[in-house]
Image (cartoon, rainbow, N blue to C red; front, side):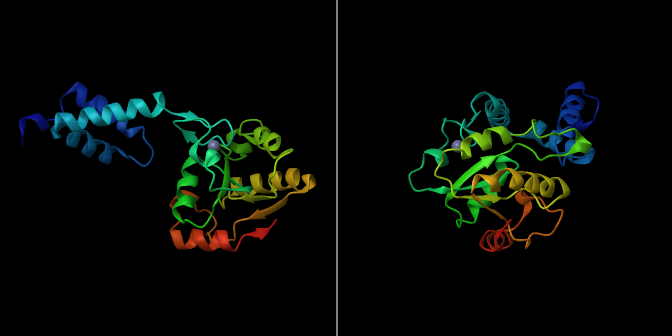
Length: 203
Ligand SMILES: [Zn+2]
């Protein structure tokens, strides 16, 4: 075994520990990544470290849709090719990437940054619901598409939002249930997601 691979280094253990805190990275994967980085070209490691730091330092939330962006308003909110009569409500910024990837939806978005979950202590004030309601008032938006995840929390959130939005005289639709219950949007394939958008139903 290469001397550098004997796991007796404080620095290696520290890196393994930090990587292990990331989602979907178990102890074995953390170890594999740490040893990979240990042997990787210095330039590659530097670029990775810089990218990690700048993801927080150089981004902000769009003050209209709350998507992660470098510029406020974000390119979707400021884009003149977008259909400004529709807004699609998602739980997380990465859900927008999944929906944009289908190339079928041309409207606007609103990121809640979570879903209502009494068991996890996430209430209506912990996600961007207030901001959504004030955005809908006096706007040109005529349809709200609820694209929260088909999970218990996502469903609860969709039902709660529909009760608030329908009285505003705005049409409320929900993605068709081509998506299996329990699936997170970001992991859905393009075909399933396309069908779900096309088959959206009035709530
Ligand atoms: Zn935006």
